[in-house]
Length: 147
Image (cartoon, rainbow, N blue to C red; front, side, top):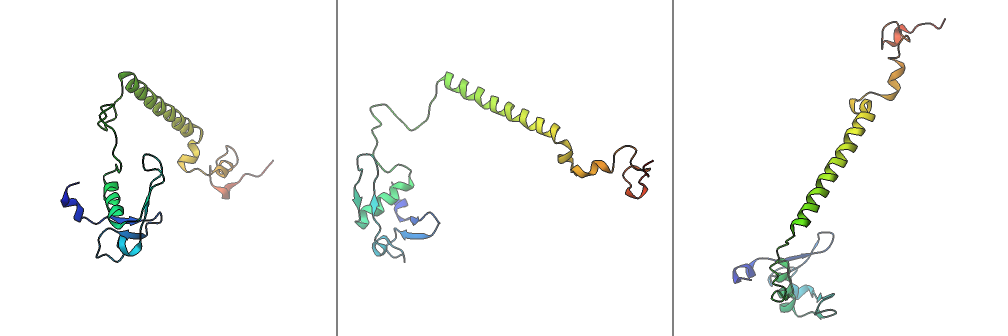
C-alpha cells in the first residue's frame, strides 16, 4: 500500500455500527488504548492471534484492500478476474432469461387473476353492482323490493 494511504483513518466498527477502535494513535479509540487483537480463522495463520498494536494496524489497513493474506498467484496464473467459458455464458444467459420470462408469466397471471384487487375494487362491492338489485346501478337508495 502506498504511504499516502497510511495516513487515512481506518475505523473498526462492530456489527451494530458502533466505533470500537481507530488506527490513529491520537484518536480516542486508538488501538493502543482499546487493546484490539486480531485472530485468524483458516489459511496459513489459522488460530494465530496478534495483540501487538503495530501488527493489528497493519492487518486493519490491509483489510481495506480486500485481501489480507498473500496468495499464490503464480502457480495457476490467477489475476483476480473471473473468467468463464462460452458454455458458462450461454448457460448464464439462458438461465437469466428463463427466470425473467418465468417471473413475467407469474406477474401477468397474477394481474389477470387479481384484476379487481389491482384496480382497487372492494370484493364486497359486487352486491351493489349486481344486475337487477337496484333501479339505478350502484345507488343503494334505490334498492328494489323482492316480489
